[in-house]
Image (cartoon, rainbow, N blue to C red; front, side, top):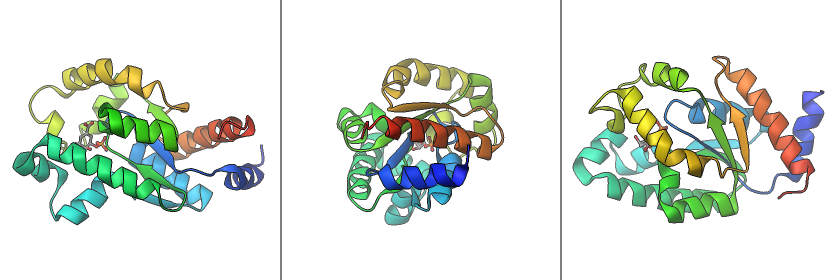
Length: 188
Ligand code: S3P
C-alpha cells in the first residue's frame, strides 16, 4: 500500500480529532505524537497541557488537589481542545471513566484504543515512576484491576489497534490502516 496516498485520503476525510485511549503504557503519547506527524496534524497531550496550566506535575496535582479535581480539569481540557482544529489529542488512561468525558470522546472524536498485553504494559510503566495511581502497590495488580473496570469502556472505541510492538512506526502503520478503513466506510 502506498502510504502517501493513504495519508492524503485520510487527510481529505478526517473531520474530527483523533483520540488515542488505553491503559497507562499503551503508547497513547508516543503513538499519538508520531501519528500526528504522519498526518501533518498538531499533537497535544492532555496531561502536559494540564501540567503547564497548573504549574505542577500530575503527581503533585493528585497530592494537593485530589483525583476528582484532576478529572474535572481533564474533562474541561478535552472539551476545549477538541473544539479547535483537527488534531491528535492524547488524554490519560482514566479519562474515559468519567461518563461525561467518555460521551465527549465517543460522540465527537475518532477514538483509537491502543491495546497492549499486560506484560508489555508492566514493562513500559516500570520505566517511569511518576504515575500517581501506580505508587501504592504492585503495578501489575493495579493495571489488572484497572483493565477489568476500564476494558469494557475502551472496547467502545471506534477503532482498536494492537500496540504491543516496541517499534512505534509499526503501531502507527497499523493505526493508519485502521483509520483509513474506518473512514472509507463513511463512518464519520
Ligand atoms: C491515569 C493515567 C495517566 C495520568 C494520571 C491518571 C489513569 O496518564 O493521566 O496519572 O487514570 O490511568 P497516562 O495514561 O498517559 O499514563
